[in-house]
Image 1 (cartoon, one colour):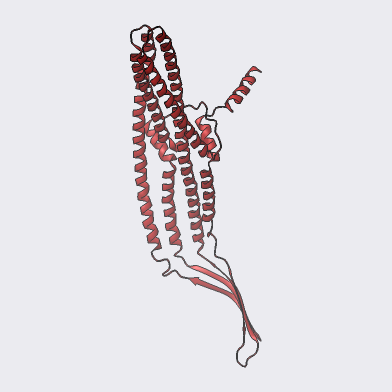
Image 2 (image 1 turned 120 degrees about the vertical axis):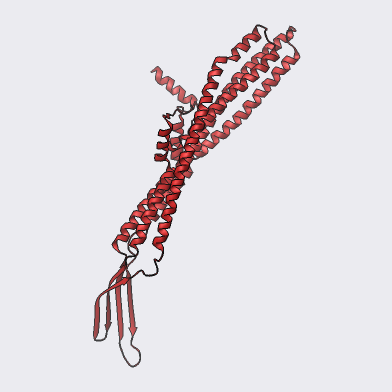
Length: 389
């Protein structure tokens, strides 16, 4: 019972349970208006690709022609006909349409990936800003405590006005930085709400994402297998190859079958009609054109594969370097612990207040650099693993 009460209190105070970055991205994938428009566009494209796969419409004709001159009566003609291509043409058209539909789906995945990547980067930025804000609150509390101590010491003549002024300047600096951070946090939260279709998100207590990257070779294999832009490039090659086969099939003759009737006073003629269209000029150079396009998309596919491999290797190297630098920086910061040492030195009178503030300012800069390195590391990780989104 006690546990349930705690859970209810947490929900009341926090507006619901804290979300992970994955929770945020799932919500964005569902609510983002751009992605909804992309989905609708994809549906329309798929329907468009399914259009024109059947034979053309049947034709019906009718005529009533009165006799001229001294003759009387009239002639009535009517007929119905249906034109169609060689059967293999329809099979090839369906193949091309299916590949185009697959490409539309892959392009939709690529658009989704870009939106989710931007949302993920915004989450990482928000985590960094909140960590900076937490540190500023600690620093502000520390300088306020120091200023209060200096105020009491000034009454006994144990502190100078210069020391007090230095503490006040540091306090104003921290307060201004905090105000700037709060504005930046509001802007990032607003950007995430936009990504979420204008709906607010529970962004409290977000943590940097945890990801497993086993090796560069495995990462390359995964990138090639999952990258939607590369998948679209491969489909372009398949589509171009299928188009060559379709254009070849369209060099086969088209057929027309029908039934016609002609009736005059005293006579009636009726029977089947068959026609044949021989593609002598209309389809000239179509196969050559489609073969040239196949060669072009094949070359483009190879070029993009090389680009994808190169970019992935570069991003991996950058990520590895940032991880090494971050680990070294954080290890050194954990070992140094200058804040405690400086506070103790000030308390024992080994350093002056101005020296303490100066040294703490240097230490705070080092902390800020560590947090910035951490943010850049996770931004690189997000870019490196975007094909997993």
